[in-house]
Image 1 (cartoon, rainbow, N blue to C red):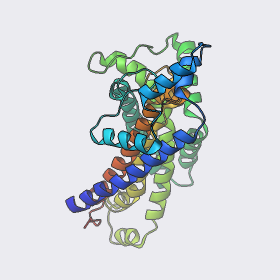
Image 2: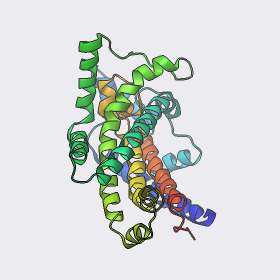
Image 3: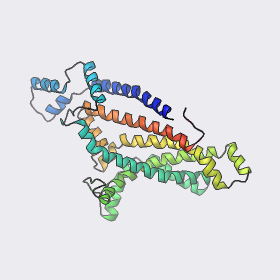
Image 4: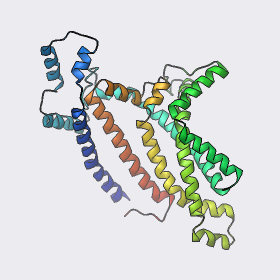
Length: 317
């Protein structure tokens, strides 16, 4: 297992380098200049000489290969540079927002799993009944309704029914858990509803397919209790595809909270991503892309290792 994990970690390095190269080149191809946007966006009368000095200060006048090598060398030292827009260290820009986005993503993933596993299991066990149709209606609605629109409905419902809206100012969980949860539980519900729909539908199909296998019929023919057949024989196999989707959904939540954070006025990583793209802040965009790529790689590795725990027949050699 350790050898397999070490090989996977080693394979992550060329993947991240390829992502870094593609993101670096694509951002340079896209039209736009962060210096002009920064100094001339509000009608500022800035001379060309001032623009050139600012480009020189930011290192934008260097050849592209030199810029890429400097950036990768800084990444190797965990020095991600400074934001071209604010002038603050990128580590500081991300760290003050990453905790909020991670908490929303974790809460959404937890809610999705707690809702999806019972719904998918019940829908498969009562396939063709009114319970199955009800669960399928709920899950299809979750796939059809955009999370940002559901978020707006939640805010309007809270205002109309309870005459209350979620707090605007972010409070860390360790300072005031009640204020923290009263603000972040709603975006977690809005985002987690869609994830729960995806997981529940996949789990339903996986359980139905597993229950048709020969070893399930053999267990039933031996007189094994139906509950044991489901929990001991069917669920470990049916959960494998669901675990993959749960891991990918969690990774998508980190990089896909942009619109939802705008709706709930949350200053998280998603909103930072939108601001960076609007301002053509190359260094910040590149670092955020690498953060998402690293997160996907780590989660995929964790999912692969979790296979061997859920299903003992799987062994990584």
